[in-house]
Amino acid sequence: MVAGALPLGTAESKPAISDFTLENGMRAVVIEDHRAPVVTHMVWYRVGSADEPPGKTGIAHYLEHLMFKGTDKIAPGQFSRIIAENGGQDNAFTSRDYTAYFQRIAKDRLGLVMSMEADRMRNVNIRQEDIVAERDVVLEERNSRTDNDPAGRFREQYMAALYLNHAYGIPVIGWREEIESLDRDDALEMYERFYAPNNAILIVAGDVTPDEVRALAEEHYGVIEPVDLPESVRATEPPHLAARRLTMRDPRVAQERLWRGYIAPSYVTDGDSAAALGLLSDILSGGTTRRLPKMLTLETDLALYAGAYFSGMARDMGEFAFYAAPKGETTLTELEGALDWMIADLLENGITEEELARAKKAAIASEIYAQDSQGSLARQYGAALTIGLELDDVIGWRDRLEAVTVEDVMEAARLVLVPERSVTGYLMKAKTEGADG
Image (cartoon, rainbow, N blue to C red):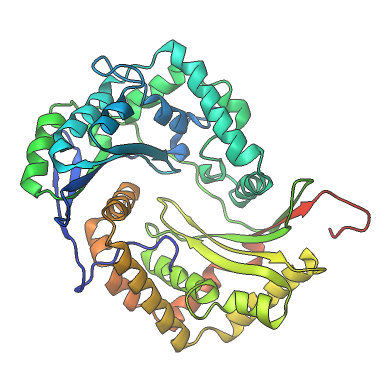
């Protein structure tokens, strides 16, 4: 499967897609799926952790939590209970580029969830008594996912090294020291600046028609006044001129790991290169070819596992990375040497037409299968549009994918896999006598 790939509009399974924009600037996309009387309703805001003010890391995610605390119409903590009592499920998530809220519910309850989501778009009631309690919830989430997990801590340090200046190097959940100081004013400032119809995209997938969605959207969202949005200004990423390395030791590490990463184009900044890099990651790590694990686990017997991935669904830039775990007495230095040889061989000798054809076939099959999921389609379209892509980019993705040539893949590989632009990380057990590194 091509990591981060877009849904493919195909002759075999092309969903019925339509869109419109309300007078207040809120865009809506309808994905028709009439197989069951259910709908997935999502509201995506064009704000994520990369848009946080300096010193306030984690505020986008913290605000996501506070959005469930109620409004003047909905009592504190009752939002999800009302959804559940009507047979639905709801949740939310924050990324570097967006924050999204969603419900899956019977089609005859769509008006209910729209009215509730529209209410908290501008009327959320953030009480002082919720601030400390919910901040503790976020800190505990950070404890479980990062601070108490050596791999999570290592990944956080690796990302901070990968980005010299851009906010993508900051963890979405935020740095602990800054989370601890977040307050009500910080949350309200973020909310009032970014939570507005002209900064949101509505996605409705399921057993509905565009006319039904438009009528409900105009009734509930259309009455909300737009706001003057701040100019989106993000730090630039300077050229990477020197390879960077990091070594992290932790007594809790059960399996040592090697990581090698590079900043890469995204689907927004260079869709053709991103398509090629997605296929390259599949050639190296997925499908039937699996070039990298074949070399490191079968031919040389140096690794327990190995792979590569491409993450390109981002507004500003993506990431291409390799990972591996040493086997037996193999050291991370030896494993890194084998990885270096594999990358050099790739750049010198390239890939084959057969490998590319298999990768394309696997990507297309995977995405056609994914279109069976109503929720997956809603997420894919929502993420794509929120970072700056258009419906034509999504619907026409298969054509772009099939147009990729062997030379396109190799040109993208030569663009990204430059030693001076790499970050190499070792996650190791606590240092002992004679340890590697």
